[in-house]
Length: 304
Image (cartoon, rainbow, N blue to C red; front, side, top):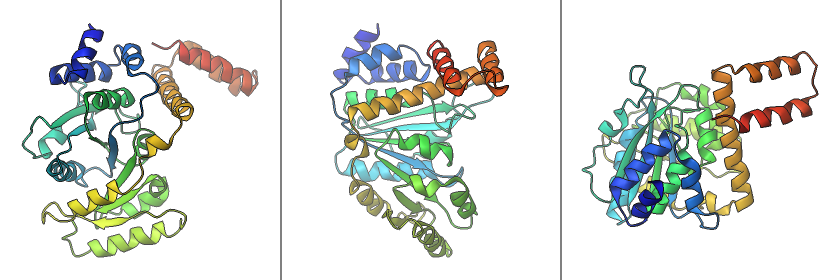
């Protein structure tokens, strides 16, 4: 079944794409999908993470960027990580409602449930991104639920991280606390029509000056005034494609780390007896760290 869906995917079948993304989101048939991608193909799309605090306007911004990108003739896919519904366990779907573009064959949007404590990202995004690239999308936007650990996690998956901030939000404390700016490639000050937007841009610039080795552009955008979106996209395009600069060995190591982390969370959340026994033995000093680490890796590879 999966082989047939993958064949249809390569032929441009959107229904097959939707079904495969659903399988990946549920953690189904991942090995078959990854095997079909091969290891030699270079990343084909420009993958951009849009992150920022809840309510800052990430979905509205992506909606505007979709329009800008589509005007160039490029195709666009969006993986929007929504908070998980406490009732259904699915995504709350707010993101799709705020992306107000009329959909066409060149646009694909999927809302995904981000589990609490999973870095504000849905699981198995690496597989979903490869599916979208195999289908042939030119640009892929990844929207996180919030900012913080999500920026670190997202950076491992994408070419460019865009941090969206807004005036009078108090986010400057959060930037310093979480080290968010260290993971950011572009900063966009949203709601630039507000009188304090210039001050916010200056604050961000001052924080970035503490790391002079990195040149991070700071731009102002406004969905309400419909300004700055073309300039933001031009700044994103000017940056190198980070995933193409990573060697195959580095990428495999990176993805292995992500995979092990997901399995570690699963053991921790269900308080697996073998896992808890290992942790307690190490905590009491009954095991050397190297021995505990080896046993932990064995446990992680057995997680289903």
